[in-house]
Image (tube, rainbow, N blue to C red; front, side, top):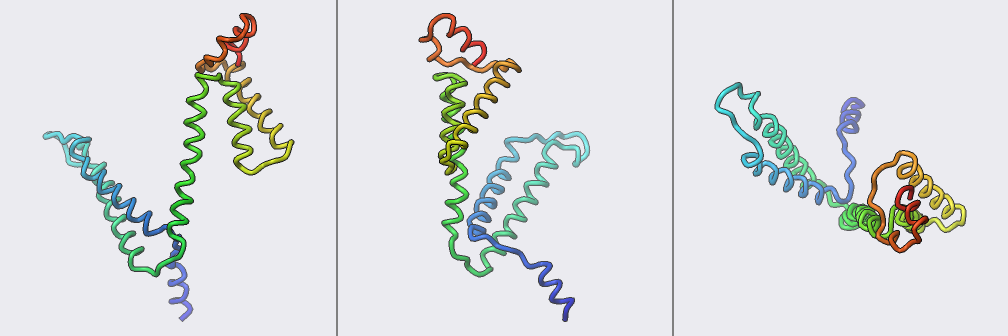
Length: 179
């Protein structure tokens, strides 16, 4: 009796509320990738089957599709869990930070590396819920350190801000070269 209970607990899986949505998404993705195998890979008439450029990608995609179908089947047959769409929205909220990064990358050529880094660091600190003076000073200090490290010391070539063109000659050269 205790052995059966141990096996049941061993194979019991924890399900998240968005499990069914995830299963459908992965199955659709794997079927799409599998349909693209003939356009994206070649088959050579000579050589062994396992040496073909299409063989291992096809094996992996067939496996991915099969396991995705099994996952969907298992998720569809199990009990319903409340909060499915709340969980899916939580997954989608991760795209917010991709948006922050895209906005940052687009602003660097316009306002410059230093101002963009300072603004995004402080804005993300505020977005994360930190409201203390220490948090804002720490974020601004970290941003300044990052700019000094990459642009000044490591001399990473980054686009200069268009706003730097409005600065006086001496300051403009310093900002273009070091910040």
